[in-house]
Image 1 (cartoon, rainbow, N blue to C red):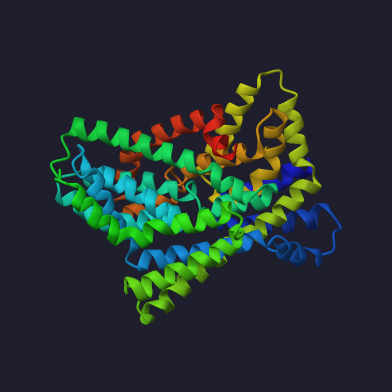
Image 2 (image 1 turned 90 degrees about the vertical axis):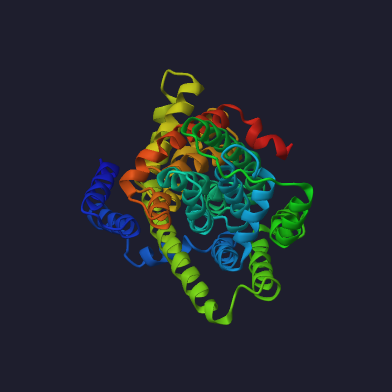
Amino acid sequence: MGSLLLFVILLVLFVISVPIAIALGLASVLFLLIMTDMPLITLPQRLFASLDSFPLMAAPFFILAGKLMEHGGISERLVDFAKSIVGQVKGGLAHVAIIACMFFAALSGSAAATTAAIGSLLIPAMVKAGYDRNFATAIHSAAGTTGIIIPPSVPLVLYGVSAGVSVSGLFIAGILPGIMIGVSLMLLAFVITTIKGYGSDLEKTNLKKVWVSFKRAFLALIMPVIILGGIYGGIFTPTEASVVAVVYGFIVGAFVYKQIKWAQMREILVSSVVTTSVILFIISTAGLFGMVLTREQVPQSVANFISAMDTSPVIILLIINLVLLAVGTFMETIASIIILTPILLPVATAIGLDPIHFGIIMIVNLSIGLITPPVGVSLFIGARVGNTTYEALVKAIIPFLLILIVNVLIISFVPAISLGLLK
């Protein structure tokens, strides 16, 4: 009965449009005041305890690294390199957009940054080449979701902290799913461009052109090798790697490419601090909400209920996917991870899922929420960057949503895609 009151309060706050971080914290405080005699001094202690994590320190540094990449001239070089590789393929610019998003995802770890950085460069070029504006924007919004799947990824760091599993292992597990999603988006783009007659932008390329663009983009392309190679080689931890990413991004952007000026550093730092503050505020209040859930034994009750269902693990896994997809449509990714991990992880492990495999399933599901109304953060960013309306973009994104759901099912029922590189 107590837990029902908690969710009723939270639902009412959502309905009246209270921001999610405040709603989580306020629902927890009201519940504790009404239903318990817990001293209020424990509330700020719990808020700060949620942030007291060494692996969590990677999140703000990866955010700053992504901002440095966005302003450091790296995105243009990645686009040029992608053009030299797939310029002659039908619907070349569509494929360039997806590959460039995948490259940038491996640098920024952010779906929003990926959509904004690559979309601002390529959407105008695609429209000029005859592509439908909504289709071009939908591609960047969908491909931008790889930003939280391909490592390094801030949501993977947060899941690792919440679930108590290896962040390095999660990074390795995210590589193949991220590549598979990118390839599937390219196949869909090929089909659509063929049917619609887009793709008059074919560019002739040759090995010399590929080599020249590769040399220009080399320092950008080698960054994931340095960061991920250092983690997997045991040279530094994911948290230390995030600092390396910041230093590397700043040196390359400011002194090699000379795209970052001192006047821009204020904007970059302020933007990073604001983004980090929002994320940490959500994490702290979600941590308080999670404490209340644990106190009321909600995770155990959900796990026992699902485990007691007279059904197969396949059905249970489908139910988990449906829950994650549904939550992702209206709840912010970070809050979803913090709240749902302690609830669903026991259920997942009870049916034999590896915690790392489940982490990839969760992140891929929640990435779809980035392009699903009503929240759809990447849709709002895409609409702004692509100079189109949110409503028109929702219609254009539907085929990409369907192909991403197919990817979710494949990743869920073929564990080797996530765990193959760990063996």
